[in-house]
Image (cartoon, rainbow over all chains, first blue to last red; front, side):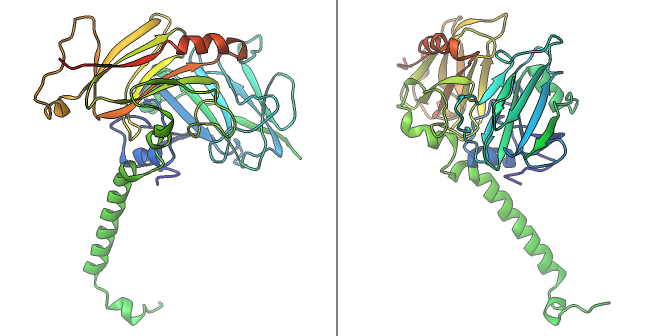
Length: 167
Length: 192
């Protein structure tokens, strides 16, 4: 209940899960315990929603033996960030010193979409390096309207995490 | 139909219900105690690296050098560990770009105030952290007088964290963002 959450304290959309009341002073005891035990410092979920994914959209555990692609669309004009961490929330060492993309620095297609590729070795475009057997993805969306929609249970669908190939 | 062992048949339904109730109470109390007794919460982890009532610009997040787990790596942070048990705290923060945030947190991680920079509202933000009304009751003295322009934010705890987060557009913007973040400050103000 404290680590993984339940239907009362978390919301899921595909492989993404968020603690609905994270950061809020009126959060339920499980959310507050989760925040404290894991050393997190979230902004109130009335402004910013933080999603975490440990698996791809087909349910396979995210790991550096596979290559994944995520198409960032339907996020509108919101500020967002997509970051890769190891299983403990640490940054993944890589020679490119690249740990995340956000709506300000990602390269976009002519139609406005941003395609991010997660792989161990370099890829053209928005390449986010991953290593290790356990990868956690964190998608942060900062937008009060988005947060309100999540609170009311009307959240827009989130980007799929598509597995392309595995070694 | 399999018969239950004799010792299990002798356990009354009242004992089972009582055990379940007791277990539930212990579970709830233990869960509620975690934010108070946990030594791994964000405030405890940052305590040693943040001098009291002083804004500190943290180094850019890097592998093995993150102050907290899952902290956004594409942002720079300035933080201040405040204590308003003696003086009030005046917080100044630049909010130069959309995506910047100024947030206030209790030691348990509750984010009781957050202000995002928006296209329509950019520039320096100034606010004074004061004790909440119930905490103020513990003081004989009244807080200092305020002007109409001054924003006061009541902190539910004597101590806590001020966090200014500045998203990075890219490496080329790091120096500019750091320079802007250095203007953030946390200054004790005497009660009058």
